[in-house]
Amino acid sequence: EVQLVESGGGLVQPGGSLRLSCAASGFTFSSYWMNWVRQAPGKGLEWVANIKQDGNEKNYVDSVKGRFTISRDNAKNSLYLQMNSLRVEDTAVYYCARDPVAAPYYDYWGQGTLVTVSS
Amino acid sequence: DIQMTQSPSTLSASVGDRVTITCRASESISTWLAWYQQKPGKAPKLLIYKASSLEGGVPSRFSGSGSGTEFTLSISSLQPDDFATYYCQQYNRYSITFGQGTRLEIK
Image (cartoon, rainbow over all chains, first blue to last red; front, side):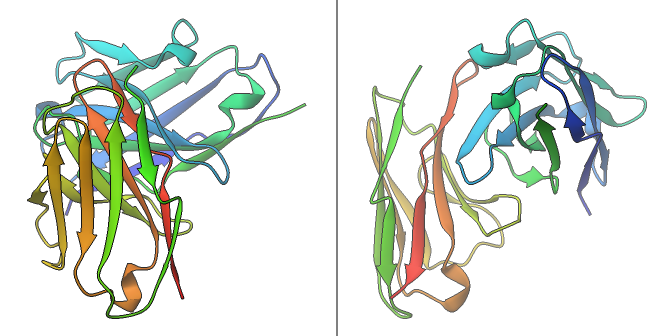
């Protein structure tokens, strides 16, 4: 069974940093593009970043470029999102999601982890 | 970036009704479109990919159509479990955007 389990969310002050993790199981993690998608409270979905199977290609939404870094460790079946210089508008539930065929669309999602940026 | 506009924003319907949700892209995206269903407090669930391909395990009452800039998601006979929020998503390698969502509520 495919499982994606996010962790690392919490309350952080504006300007602070946080590192999210996503533990994958039930599939060959190294064979898939992986993504982070976020959802602000009561709002819609926003794609944040994705990373190629070998980690050598990464893409970001403009609003997080230069502040967030996506990475992966295929030996640990894990996806990460390092978030620096956090802003109030980064407050959201962050989901990791699998891209099944490098399309990208997302066939499996984690349960999400809440990041709250507030003073 | 490509903008995705869904209509309506809210749709009221009854069990057994047929409903259609529309998604329009600001420029042509061929058939690079997916549809998701999301229930409160849960992660989105993939329903349709490549505009009209039904994801495995999704009931056949869901269908998608369209190409270019206009797309539709149809539910042929609403079931109680279908009342949720629906999102379209366009995708290419460097630009991925979602519609603002359509809330499907019980009339």
